Image (cartoon, rainbow, N blue to C red):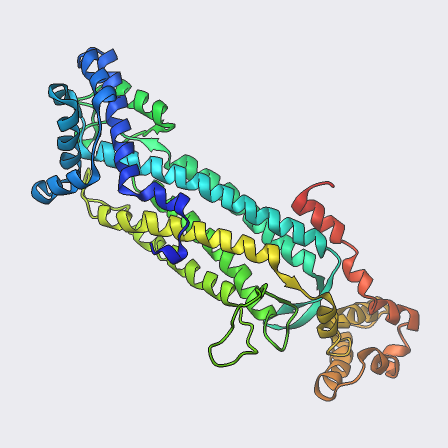
Length: 432
C-alpha cells in the first residue's frame, strides 16, 4: 500500500490499531461465552471489557522478544486487565484469533468494495441512457465491423459489473466464517458454543470444519473474485485508451484546468487514468495465484499462507477500492463525441452495412457463396480505392438486377441498427 493509490477508509481496516481492536473483541466475546458456560468467572469476563486495553508500540516491543504476535498482544492485554487475564484465551489457539480477525477484515473490506461497485454501476447506467442511441462503429479485431451504439457499449460494461456485484456478495458470504475451535480444530479444549457466540457477536458464521485454520479455499475464491473485478476495470480502461487515440477520438478522459499531459509536449492529452487502471488491475490479479497456492497447507496447519495474506489482503483490497473509485470518476466525467463517432463510422464509405446486402441477395435467391463473392468484390474496391459502397452496388448488375433499389437503401439505414436497443436495455436494466 502506498498513499498515492489508497483511500483512508479501506486503509483503516488494515491498520494495527484496528486489527488489535478486533483481536480484543474476539477474546472478550469468547470470555463472555466461557463465563456463561461456567468455565471462567463472570467477574473475569467483566474485567476484560472494563479494563482491557492495548498499545500498539508496547505489543511491538514485546513481540521483538517473544517472536509471537498473539502472545505479545495477550501479554500487553494482561498488563491492563490484571490477575483476571489468566482466563483470557482459555482453550483457544492463535489461529482462532488470527483467522477470525481476517474474516472480519475481509468482510468489512467487501462492504466498502460493494459500495464502490454501486458507484460504478450508477455512473455506467447514467451514461448508457445518455448515449442509448448515439450511433458508433462496432469493432472486431480492432477493425470496423457493424454499427452499434455507445449506450450499448456502456450497457455491456454495466451488465458485467452487475455480475461482479453478485460475485462479490457471494465471496463476502463465503469468507465470513469464524473459527474458535482450539488446536487442530477438534474443540477438545473449548466448547463449540463459544464459537457460535463469537460468530454471532462478530457478524460471522461458524466454520463447518476448521483444521485449526479456516480452510483457504474460501480465501482463494475471495481473491479470485477481486481479480475478476479488476479485469472488468481493465476491459473498460482498454476501451477508453483506444477511443482516445488521436486517430479515433470518440471519447476521452476529462482534462482538468491546469492539467499537463507531457513535460515536453504542451499539446498532449493522454489517457493517464485508464492506463493507471490497467496497471492497478495487474496488481489485484497478482494476488490470485498466491491465494490459490495457499489452499494446500501441511496437515492441520502451517504458516506458509500467513506471510502471503499479510501482504495480499491489504494490498489487493486497498488497490481495488482505489481503482473502482477512479473508474467511477472517469465514467462520470468521460468526454463523449457522437459526431466523431458518426464520422468514423462513415470513413469506409458504408462498408459497415455489407452483411445487410449479403442477406438481401440471399433473400433474392442468390446462393450464400455467390452473394458473399459479389458483396466482397465490391467491398474490396472501396477498401482499396475509396468511394461509396452503396453507389458501387447500385451500379453492379449482379446486385441491381436482383435487389430493388429501395431494399438496398434500407440496408444502409443506420436506424435499423438500433431496432432492438430497447430490448437490450430492458435485459440489462429491467423495465423502465
